[in-house]
Amino acid sequence: MYFLYGEKELAHLKERDPLLGRAIDEIGMIQREVDPDLFSSVVHHIIGQQISTAAQATVWRRLQEQLGVVNPEAVACSSREALQRCGMTFKKVEYIQDFAQQILAGTFDLEEVAQLPDDQAIQRLCTLKGVGVWTAEMILIFCLQRPDVVSFGDLAIQRGMRMLYHHRAIDCKRFQRYARRYSPYGTVASLYLWAIAGGAIPGMRDYAIKKGGNRR
Image 1 (cartoon, rainbow, N blue to C red):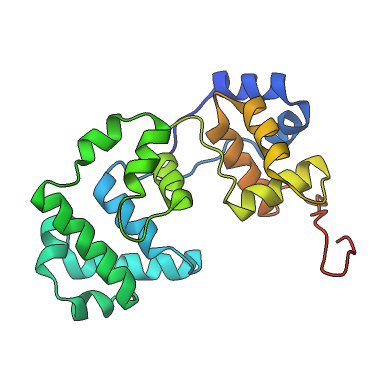
Image 2: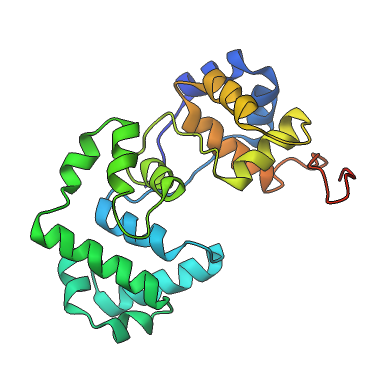
């Protein structure tokens, strides 16, 4: 299952931002996988914090093999040692087990979170151990498929903006100006900024200031 968008969203972004529009035409459609299950999505994103995408995939595969199904019951029935053997740190195991216990105790309502507006959903997700604003924003995108999420805390988003608009730095004011321009389809813009940051357009470089004041 992939994040859903189409010509309506692309036409809006192209009209509002010709530079982004040219990048969209060059890159083409982007398919990014989503996980519609909110519990497993939270667990997946906790696992992925501060490790590479490849390492995250390895740990996630091991966890799926260990549990069969990544749900609150399976996590709660597993020992810390068994979960750690999947490749997680002690802290991440603690966060995931605490999350599972909250679901089983009824103190965290997944269905309620799924219905909340973006800002309230982020606040609620951030009450979970191990979940900060960036992680919550990624859950909004890659699980709940919210259409207008552009994360200031995502370094690749900032890199994509620097590359696309030839900026040496992206401060909060500049970031918000672009986010307003993309709205209400900021998430689709995010997909393209990630692609740009990853080198999807040959010859497009990062204008970030190096230490010492030199430009790349």
